[in-house]
Length: 134
Image 1 (cartoon, helix red, strand yellow):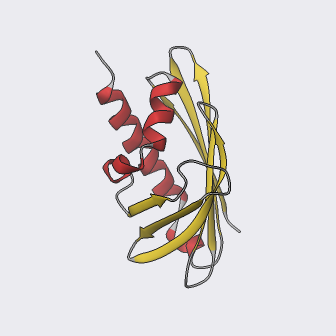
Image 2: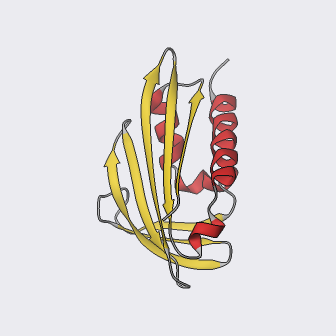
């Protein structure tokens, strides 16, 4: 299972970065290939998570939810494979170090690449920093 890890510093407090990561209504602003995200029980560990990615309906679950510290979820692809994503939020100076880890198996290993992960993190960084008061 390919493992990708990227880390980025976002010039915003941990609470702002975590809030952006957990606001599924705004994911399409920085994670455009993920659509129609639904959390049946909110951000609850083992709670069901459904979404549409690149035209495929995926089912999964929340694996980690520790406000302002960690967030994780797993999704399964109908064509085989799964994606595990884990995010760690660490205060660094006046900003946040966001570390993203992704493990993808099967077809997902070809769809979810390190390059794509870094691109999404940079979009999130821009989105959060632009929302912060000047």
